[in-house]
Amino acid sequence: MLSHLNAQNQPAMVNVGPKAVTRRTAHAVAVVVLPPALAALITDKEITGKKGPVFQTAILAGVMGAKRTGDLIPLCHPLALEDCQIEILPGAPDAAGAVEVSIHCRVSIEAKTGVEMEALTGATVAALTLYDMGKAVSHGIVIKDVRLLEKTGGKKDYRDGA
Image 1: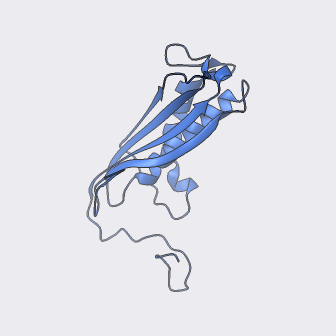
Image 2: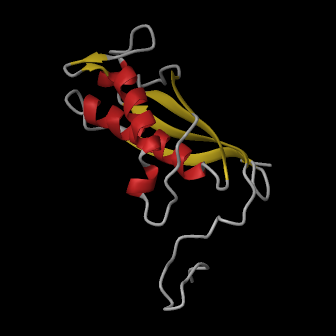
């Protein structure tokens, strides 16, 4: 059952008017597994594909996605992010040559509402862009995990596993 319904029992945006403006941060991660054929193309922590630098393009797309979260997620407040940083960290190849890549998205703002959705959207859009740019080499790319690692500000802080 939705907890935020209007008088007509329809979903409604949460009223953040009475909330205090506080420093809000969020850190999300998306984990993508690159199959051996694509993983073999990583040099100097980047893949240069037919469409250009894959990781750099994914970073740009992730920032753009985070900034557009209010347009993508119904009832999500549009926010003017003060900072959005995306980092792509490829791991070591496994025995088969596949590489797990962690895409970290960190966002912050002074606002009345949190930025968890922006961090999750940024990490997800970066992962989808990595898939899009890598599919010419292999469709075996797996986006296997997207989760919030940490958020601060608002009623309570959150840390994954805490």
